[in-house]
Image (cartoon, one colour):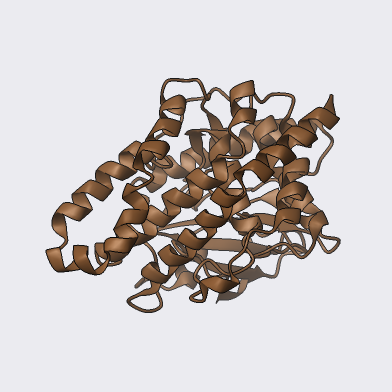
Length: 366
């Protein structure tokens, strides 16, 4: 990044003097900044330097986000909710665009910062897990009738057939020595190929329907207030058509992991059953009325699928030289992959339990 964030921030219509621009959060893809101004109303903003190497079409991505936010505004207004608190509000550039392109060809976006809220890497209690499920289900429910055309800004996202094509190409490029050195990790992928492709086939042929989904529904992308009540889903960069099972699975992957995503000591990684039940209870409370039988049937497999996909992506990025995810050290993605494999084992061992919880909650809803 060569352009000063203060210069980027000054190119948006915030109509107030900027007091400071400071780095904010630790995202794996974008760089974020907290912008403080002198304004009395909505004095703070979130500025993001977008990663154009991951998102190749930033204008289309921002147009997707705008369509979704407009749709959610209409839904939330009918529900009597404050759209400035429970939905993202994009700030246009001085030129009236949804983004600012700087002199170096880098892209920036800005939205109102939702004050008195914060996100968490892991739930602090069952209530937070259930609340996260509730707002994720509400997000899906509010978008269940969304039918506008969306740009496919991440082709193949959560499409395991697409990922396997990438994987096969990656294996063709690595050396024989690497294949021997990481034979165990490669086998993790190959031994599950058939099962994962079979599941995605149900989505591909429409047995499991495609809907507008978040596509990155981890706990860190939910804001909570001081009482740990949910406020808003954030980071809508990946929103596009897909399966709600991807969001459910990704949420479970983040809510129920007892350790960090890059925990090197896999003995610390376990499946938090109470958080699974709490999240699922909240989610189904919001989403049960529109889910199909096929979606409900596969809820317990969704965490297995998404965890496997993330394992594959971390391992593939490591073998290809760490081009996608930000890393703190050369083996970072390998450590992430090994942590995902332990979590995958936890999900696989608890499939019967998870399915039982889903069925119990469904039965109690009737």
